[in-house]
Length: 426
Image 1: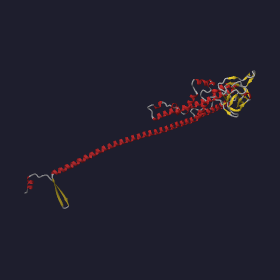
Image 2: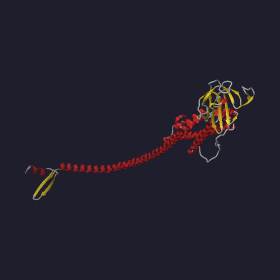
Image 3: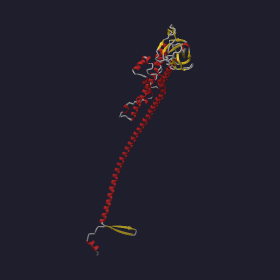
Image 4: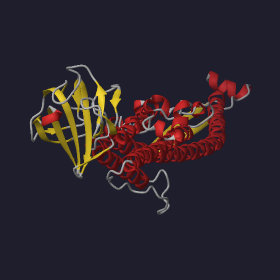
C-alpha cells in the first residue's frame, strides 16, 4: 500500500472540499482546502462589510447633502431677498435723486428767470436813472421850497446820491453782493442735500423778492418826488402870473397789485416815466420864461417905477431895473426864446430883445457889445452881450426890462420867483 493509503487507514483524514466542474464531456475536479475556503469567506465578509459601510455612508451623505442644499437654498433666498431690498432702496434713492434733480432744475430755472427779469429791469431802469440824475429827482432838489423834503435832507435820509446809489444797486442784485446775502444757517449740518438746497433757494428767493419790492418802492418814491418838484415849479411860475403846463394829480386808487407782481414794476416804471416827462415839460416851460437874472450876484441900483430922471432931475417912469456891472460883464438871457431885436435902439443904446412866447419879452439895454443876431434861438443863461454904457446912460450898468403884451411889468416879481426856482431847476 502506498503511503497515502496508510494515512487513510491509520490516521485522521484531512478536511477538504472537491468542486467538480463539468463542461460537456470534460470533467474537472478542483479541490478547495479549508484555509483557502476561509480566505474566500473572509474576503466575501470584507466585501459585505464594505458594501454595508458604503451604503451607510451614502445614506448619511445624502442627508448631509440635503441639509447643505437646504441651507444653501435658504442662504440663496436670503441673498436674493437682500438683493431685492437693496435694489428697491437703490430705486428709491435713484427716484429721489431724479426728483431732487428735477426740483433743482426747476428752482434754478426759476432763479434764472428772476435774474433775467432783474437784468431786463436794470436795462429798462438805465435810461430812467439817467433822466433821474439829469433832473435831480430824489435828492435835495427843491428842499428849500418844501419843508418836509428839507427835513429829510437835513437828517441825511433820501439824499440824491444815496437814493440813486440804492436804486442802481437794487436794479440788479448781483451788482451789490450784500443785497443778495444768503442765510448762514442754510449750511447747517445734519441736513440732506435736498433740504440744504431748499433752504438755500428759499433764502435766495426771499432776497430777490425783497429786492424787487425795494425797486418798486424806490421807483414810486422817485415818481412822487418828480411830481412834487413839477408842482412846486408851477406854483412859483403861476405866482408871477405866467402860464404853466398842467401837472397830473398823484391820486390814490386802482386795482390791488402785490409788490412782487411784475405788473407793479411795469406800472411803477410807467408812472416814473410819466412823472419825469411832466417834470421835463414843466422845467422846459420855466426855462423859456424870464425867471432868472441877467447877471449873477449883480447889485440892483435902480428899481422899477417912478424915480428921478438922472439927466433931467425930475420924476420919470423907469420901465425896468438896473444892475451894477462893469463894462464887459457878460449879460445872460433870463429865459429861452427867439431874438427879435439885436441893434441900437435910441436911448436904450445897444439893445437885445428876446421873445419868450405867451406875449412875454425881455430887453437888455446899454450893452457895449451884442453877441447874438436877430432871429437867433437862445437858451436860458446864454451870453447875449457885454455890459456897457451906450445910449442914455450915466455909467456902465445893465438895464433889464420885462414886457407882457407890450406893457412893462415889474421884474422884481420874476427875480424873486427866480430865487425860489433856482433849487428846483437843478
